[in-house]
Image (cartoon, helix red, strand yellow):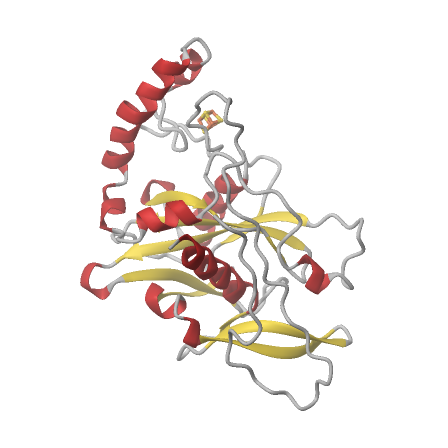
Length: 302
Ligand code: SF4
């Protein structure tokens, strides 16, 4: 897929008279080529280790015995198992995935699950003055959950954080948070955080791939995980973290006309932010930027 680049004027813009030095977001994304070397042996590992009651790992869908035998299998056996038994298990476990019309386009547009993307964050240059070159951001992950709703179309699952939270209190966001030392990786962290915040069971999440990492002003490097969510899921938000759980049509969020670029003053200089016009909830900042990144990847992959 060719590299994406930002075209100035792609958004309707607010003209803020206070800002004489507007910036343009560095919206440039590297191609989502599969970073796995061509010679690498096949592996279904996505680092979301969690052996379930059925005895299978929630990430790779193998039993403990199959995981132990993997290193003794030749490449042909591995491929046969991945294309056969493991693919069957995925279809059985995530039957709702077949109801997501965008699944093939999404998989083609996203980074593959077996290796999360590297990089400092596609918006790093926009925040240069906030982070010295040597600063190492904390790792975080969010879940961009897509719920297939049949005739109502695909919906995006969003939360509004409680006002009292230290980071991004009161803001609309995706479920997610810091990657802890005990997490197997960013996917495991996104699933764990979604379970803690809104009682989303990992068995109701079919991960599809990654978007580009994004840097936040709070000092996190956020890796978004895009996933299909079982439409039978019923949100139970943790009131200490989440004030509201709601859905917004995917089609609305992927329409260029609904996204605008605004300029705000932060830390002594004007900065460009993205914002959606959506009644009742303000969807902006990092959440809007992640959705914009998704839209551009889909557009480039079309
Ligand atoms: S690390 Fe986890 S996801 Fe990967 S193979 Fe082992 S159990 Fe499966």
